[in-house]
Length: 320
Image (cartoon, rainbow, N blue to C red; front, side):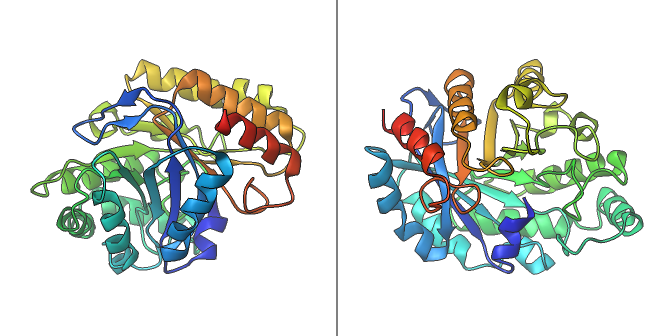
């Protein structure tokens, strides 16, 4: 959701995932991270990391395994990995062999400037022609140099909506071609072992997210950002709606890919304990590679006191 980047324009957001279930899923040469790893966005930079101990104590016995961050999309230099937060989180990742680093990567600068479709279309076509390959090669070299060559990269997230400049709707064909260029540029970096994650928002949104899928050869994980919205929609409908949770799982299975839920949480329906039970039960059944709740108001459960009923459900389930 756009609020995440607006909160820290020019910075990196970090979500820390805490391990829940014991089964391990080695992915494409990366670390063996337990299936169903769960966590919360608890802040960015060093402050977020310092909160890990508090969150860990609140949910019960758990060990951090997955760190999750966003690159700012205001300037190409930041998309290339200029923020110093990457160094900090690279040290966190490399401190333990069983940790995994997940990084959201914008596809275009001016990520949240609400550019018109005509501008977005031309930018996507320029990317598809290779105009921006060097920026992503630079990011790849930066990550390899920091020792996080096995990072999971969530490229162009929520592309099926209208929030971001890297949206797919103005030209799905160009968007897919551009994604492939990005993947090719980063896979060409010596020493890399990146995994690329395709993550739409739940539901149809502006365009069907299946229209944006760039193909199995260029995708390693199929994620979904899934908040409790719109107003009045029960969890069961969020599962069954076109392009919803069930469609996501089916699509991933058909393509032989693991699923993830990088962003999820409460939203339009307030302190909704039924939604919380539904999502946590869904994760228990589907066994995603990881899932990270957005833990600030109105979405969260630990740092947001507006949701006591849902918070109690979350804590009891995670602690059990």
